[in-house]
Each structure stands twice: as structure tokens, then as C-alpha cells.
Image (cartoon, rainbow, N blue to C red; front, side, top):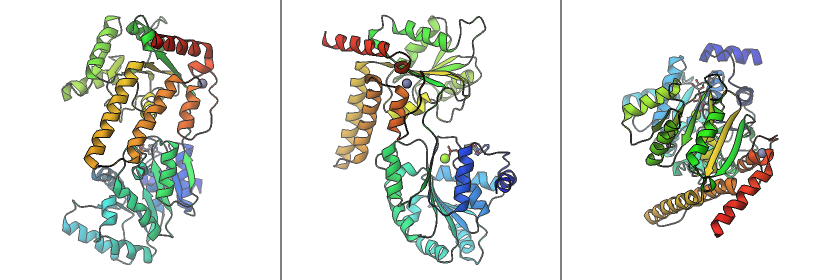
Length: 442
Ligand code: ADP
Ligand code: MG
Ligand code: ZN
């Protein structure tokens, strides 16, 4: 089967090999089709192929649920470029095209392989008869729910319409279901499996632990000169002292635009060319800074979190957080942009009690605003607070940083082997905590 799968991968998508063993294993499980499947792999890991390739090989149609028309359009275009019959029924579709699609679906052997719809469409009465008909004629091969975290109120992107997918799933009992999401904390994973009524799903989860990333936390308030400290960290991470011209580049994340400007200015003054990147810049300037950094002409980009989405650069040697991230989930994603090439890289947070208070204040304000608008509290509100608390304990608690992250995402305790400040020297971490506590009581 492996050779024929590889062959099909090449024929239909033009890829020579699977992106990972995990991607291959998921495809095999979906092709077998005897169990529901749960996939949790980071952005860019190639999750779409996990249902697209099986869809091409299966008899019948794969129904794909995806939250945004824009995402759907990209995928449908991509599939059509590869001559794979795919389309989408959505509210924006002209009536003529819609009728054509429904006619194909109603025919004895539809040509369509992948049908994309938004969750609103699932619930629409006009589409129901079509689904029931396909199902009764055994023409649905798979149900794929992409961005499945949208079903969870614990998730960062909850969409009420996703809740209706549980019912849909129940109405299609014989159809194997595949749920896909990027890195989700344990409680969100459980929520997805429960809400979509997955039956004893086979789970494929990328291990959270990345042994080439070294994590540490520095209490900023204890430093005589934080910029000099950051500068020294960067010099070491980029090996700027090693005689050679150094190598790689890095990202410093700041919470505010002013923070970005200040840090970029200070680093440049200390001798490392750095540029700020934030929403206050003109779009053209932003693109320019990003290009300069991508091409290695600027070593350090000092950015708000608006930077990084979709940026896939292999030789990022460090990611420093000048301010605390707003959640452990985002911290894991942001710091994870380091070391994509597998080489040793550093992830550092500069922690301060002032940041903690400020971010906490903003999160609560945000939650209150949403509750006033809505008139009631919600699980998702608690989620924002819990996830921030996890970030704070990551910084404030004694213990392996990697273990804290893995535990949060429901993974087993990894073998850190000195890849964090606590495991390489717990005394230093303890001493820092003691000094911070002393500072607070004085
Ligand atoms: P995800 O949904 O996990 O974020 P995508 O499905 O959008 O990832 O895929 C990310 C990129 O990887 C896409 O450009 C896709 O074409 C590419 N890709 C997927 N599978 C393979 C493969 N086996 N070999 C090479 N590239 C692949
Ligand atoms: Mg995707
Ligand atoms: Zn450790």
C-alpha cells in the first residue's frame, strides 16, 4: 500500500514524499476508514493533505467543513490546479453554479471528490436534503472537520455554528470522521472529541517537545540594564563573537509599538542592526522590514505578535519575549518559530511583575467588555484567564520549562536533558525567584 500511496501522492499532488511520518500515518488511517481520526499537528505540517489524498482515492465524496470562505477558496483553487474535482457551496455562490453542483451531487455517479462547506451551510435547510440523499446512497466517503478547535469554548476561536457539527456527525453514522487542528491544549482536544462525537478516535498528535529549543526566563526587574542583557543574549545566540560573521537571525516580541521602537533603537545603538515591525508602520514599510529580515540584511526584527503568521524561516536562532506572552498557547507558538531547521536555538522570556499586572488587567477588561455586551459569562472567558495563568506559572514556578509546556498540552513529560534553565541549573532559577520575592516585599 505504501508504494501505491506514494505514487498517488506524486500523481495527484506532485509531492515526492510525505512531509512527515505522522502525515503518512494519518493518510493511511484515513484511507483505511474503519475508525474516526483526530489530528493535532502544527500549522504548516500539511494537515489538508490528510483528507485530500484519501478523498481522491476513495469512492464517493469527502465533505469538508472549514470556518472561512477565504480558506475554502484557497483550497478549492489549489485542488483544481491539480485537476482534482473540488468545489464549495456557500452563501456567496451564484444560483446557477449552485444548481450545477447540486445536479452533479444528485446524479448516479457524481464527479465531485471534495465538497467544502462552512458550518452555517451545514445547518441550512436548503442543503439538508442533499446531504441526507448522499448519505442514503452511501456516497459520502469521509467527513473532515478542519480547524476543529472552533468547536471548543475553551479554544481561542470558538464558533457557535461548529457546535451543530455534533448533530451532523450523529446523522451520518457510517461515515468516518476526521477532525484536524493545530496545537491545542489538552482540554480543547477533549472538547473536540466529545463535541464532534468521535468514537474511540485514533489520535495523531505531534509531540510538543522540541529538544533543540533551550528555554529560560529572566526577571527583568532584577537587571541593572535590561537592554545590555538582551544584547549579550543575542550576541551569544547569533554567535557574533565567534570570529565568523555569525549566523542566523532572531525575533524579539514586544507588547506595544513603543516597546518595539525602543528595543530596536537600543539594540542598534549597542551594535546589532535591529528594526521594529508593528501595525503602526505603513504597509509598504512593514513588508520592507520583513524582507530585509528574511534576506538576512537585518539580523533582528523587533515585533508585536502581528509578525510571524505564515513566516517560515529555517535559521531563526532565538525568539526573545521582551514582554510576557498573553497565554502559554501563544507563547508556545511564538517561541516555536525558533529552530525550525532543527539546530540548537534559544527561547527566552524577560519576565516582570509589572507586565503581569498590566496584561492581567487588559485580559480582565476584555472579558468584562465581552460579558457586558453579551450579558452573561462564558467558558471561553475563563479560558483566556486560565491560559494566561499557565503562562505566569511557567515563569514563576520552579520546574522544567519543557515539562510545563508538555503537560499543558496533555503530552507526557519529555526528557529535557538540560534544555532549560531549571534542568541545567536549578539553583540559579531558585536564586532568581528568591531575589524577585525580596524585591516585592521591600
Ligand atoms: P496545515 O493545514 O497543517 O497548516 P497545509 O495543509 O496548509 O498545512 O499545508 C502546508 C503546506 O505544506 C502547503 O503548502 C502544502 O502544499 C505543503 N505540503 C503538504 N504536504 C506536503 C508534502 N507531502 N510534501 C511537500 N509539501 C507538502
Ligand atoms: Mg490547515
Ligand atoms: Zn528542563
